[in-house]
Length: 350
Image (cartoon, rainbow, N blue to C red):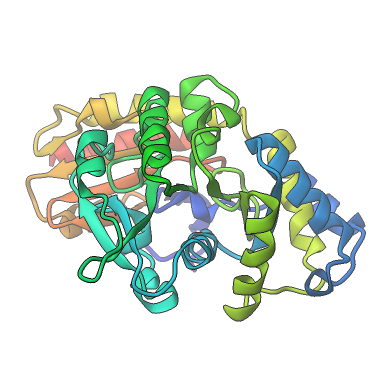
């Protein structure tokens, strides 16, 4: 297996996730000069600036800075729900698949799941699953959406479908929460400001530490009264940080300079997908390559293909028995993209 600690580190093309990005020089400079306070006490000016700016971008009243997207999602669910309430989400949603049973542990919520086409649930099926609270049934409190959808391959929920979910929620007097870890990718992919997406939800957790390159952090946004209650859950979960402006300064650089460049990641992902699909033993559903993620189906066990790629300096994750995932980001340029394509061609030919 290729060793990250070896002297050949600069040859590695790290496609495991867009969470592996390193802070940019501008971020390091911002950290050095950030005005600081104590965020738990509510007086860190850089954190407050980040929260205001992110909420404004999303068209929402307020935001709260949290250490991770997982915490943002789980705080949102716990703030929306009481123990025994129900939520609806896609069957491979991040909040269930990668957040260690958080809705049950933190909120005591029941999770109803539905299948999807490329990560997008059928609105009619969602509406049919909504329950009113009764002596026998848990009442549905929120619909949880994920845009882009990680395990579907970074796929985008169209704006008209987002609007349908909003209408359904209004009819049933429930809320919509968005896991917007990669909503910036969705906005760039659609060619619209991010608020065109988030106008259809009540709350959204958005990541700064994936494609936007910040080292740490997400912002949970929503109505001001909701965010004040969410701050209690942040404290309860241990998410209160002190001189967090050091990190929030990076987040401001992310919001101001790193969003539009996501289109470069999308283009490199598409170029790689088109080069891989059709190679012997490998296949990519090009319909699923909508942003910066490429899912590659493999005839051989994915673990074996991943090991062979590592011999060429390409590191990535298997995500199923016969599937691996490639995620493009700021630290993968055209040269490294060419290296990845060459590695796939080499193993397909051998």
